[in-house]
Image 1 (cartoon, rainbow, N blue to C red):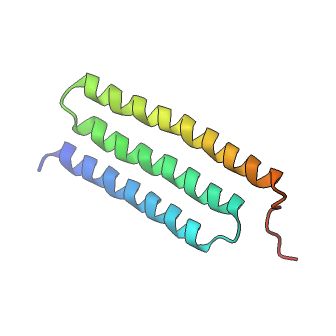
Image 2 (cartoon, helix red, strand yellow; image 1 turned 90 degrees about the vertical axis):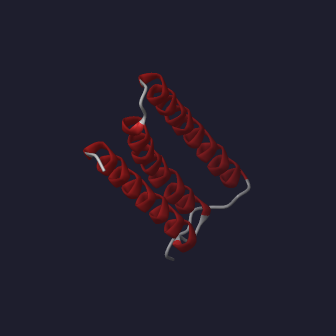
Length: 100
């Protein structure tokens, strides 16, 4: 294994840890708003690590740029879809969870 292979594998493992953390948050948090936060934030970061590993592993610059472009598009889609779900939930009268 080369240094690039080890670095790419390390980035993939870190990305997978973020995905697992988001899944745990989805299962443990009490309401839709905190679950949305638990899914979107770690998934964006985890995907960033995985894309970084793929980009350094790729043999061509064009391939790396395409993978990074997909990640940027997914960042936008994740943010917009999270906002749409939260707004629809709020408009249905579902308020954030409180300890009271």
